[in-house]
Image (tube, rainbow, N blue to C red; front, side, top):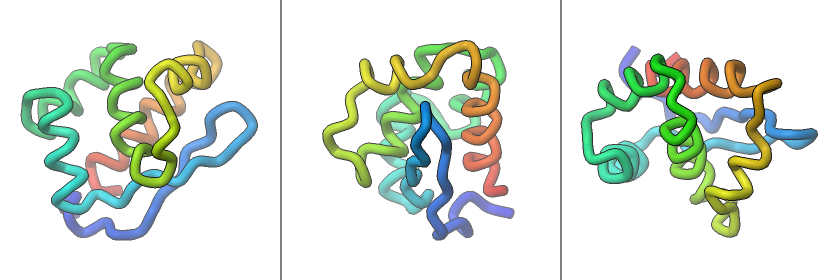
Length: 98
């Protein structure tokens, strides 16, 4: 399934709250590419390498439409070793269009 075929909003749990991710429309995909200065495929590979900065930045991009006051620092506080793998897996699935 293509990432452009996923208009519904998905959620991730950070701390004790569920957050809605932006749907992967062309604007969000462009923001991801601009935020990382590379293609979507390469962003997925960064997540595979467990890069904390990539995970934090991607969560920020996917949350900023729904939560404009959410900062990179706040996201960094909400993601820790207890939920990092779960968040990373959820984002990888989102990018893969699952």
